[in-house]
Amino acid sequence: MPEETITLRVDRYRPEQEDEPTAQTYEVPYNEDWVVLDALNHIKDQMDGSLSYRWSCRMGVCGSCGMMINGEAKLTCATFLRDYFPGEITVAPLDNFPVVRDLIIDMDDFMEKLVAVKPWIIRDEEKPIAEGEYLQSPEELADYKQFSQCINCMLCYAACPVYGPETDFIGPAALALAHRYNLDSRDEGNEERKEAVASEAGIWNCTFVGECSEVCPKHVDPAAAIQRTKVATTGDWFKSFLIPGRKK
Image (tube, rainbow, N blue to C red; front, side, top):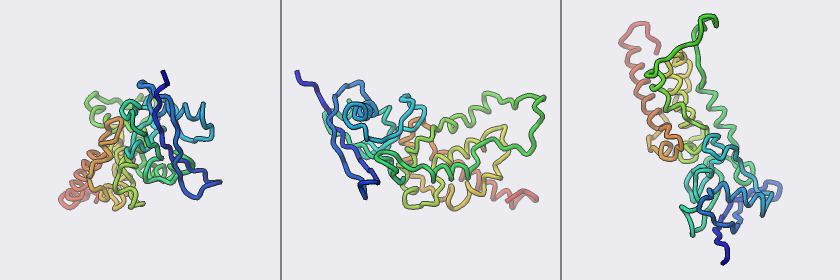
């Protein structure tokens, strides 16, 4: 009995020989337990060693294997061939990013915007190490835990209708991480982040379509983080006029 196969139509871009991406078709063995990443690895190992893409853990943890699968932003390590068989699967680099080669995107813009929101613990004054760690209750951890699950897979940026045309927009993942640290009981950096977060390129550029939360593989819900930050920022603005001496 002939082995069943499935067709993958993969975007190729080799800047040394092409001016723009082209599509290349591969017939790969169909296994209902395979994910799209398995099929790409089969192509790389058995059919075309020149195919370039990122991956690392194959467990939905590293976030590096995000691509557009039939037009949807997904982790290829969590997208099964059986969900598309016997149809064709198109594989393309994530939308809204420059393409370096084949399925590899340039993430420099995101990394710069991530640093802009200072996603780390900020203290006005550090206590001596001898006094021990900063303790948290389970309730304090629960306040921000959901927003700490981001794996920087960039799916939310590929799905965001604002990030593509508005190149200054900080974007959902970075803003969600800013919210995560603002909620952390150990952190005192809210004011330092506000310059970037509350700017026109920050939370106010979000149109609350919610696609970022729809595609998030870790259910971080960046759309909710952004809207909650809008509410908190607006509240702080009003309080700055009502409470003398409060920072605006």
